[in-house]
Image (cartoon, rainbow, N blue to C red; front, side):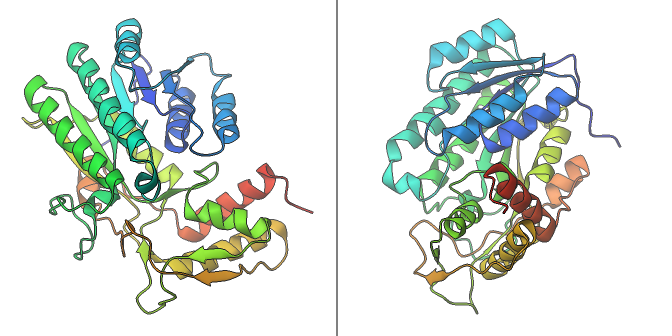
Length: 342
């Protein structure tokens, strides 16, 4: 079975195009000759220079159109659908971050709830072949049973961010049921790689090291019961999405939710040691982070671990990039991008 059937005759609308996943997915689509309409409000949640770099890399493609705007603006969203008539919509625009949702809840409701509602309304009034949207592994809350399966009970989120993502799944389910919108939600598991999000731990650790500051590790210094995460390399994520785009749910409800993760969790301390080695290789000298251990933060969960059987069954795909390979790619990019090599 060949699942990578990107259709260059279709128009793809990618929201959050200046974001990490949005950028890589758009680049892949453009390389296949697809028409991509990218929307992003280019907010300053993290370094906008990185967002502009990503957009600058997409700019040379003839079939790329960028619209600066916010999906919480319903009139703008409706106008885009009316004008460009997208066949496939990938909604990646969202306010990300578990901890930030405790400090600034308003933006999560605005972007993740109202913004997603506007996308659903637009798909209702302008029928599409497939709506793919970002959910998150955070919907599993502090589930003790691992690996996390799509059939698990997910009604106990431990952050507002997780609540908004669970809400997205419920909203998409309802719209699919009522208006026959083929929709797929993807529960992302800690996506990392070059040009990633600076608010993510691995990126922050690199920043701290090069600024001569200690890194803070929120695991109580408990190595026996360390936190562990299912880190998923960006290229694997993009390949998974790419295979899904032309394979909308065929069942009556027309709505599916999949885990998209590495199915191979890594303890936080192992991850940190692997990052130290990767940066050592990138700069050509031994790198050791200065470490401060602190209690686990509110909203953090002890483990994320994806069962990816359903995704594999649907599109014949399982991520394969090892943590060593992925972090080396990140470290090499980081050192070059920030010109840190002696």
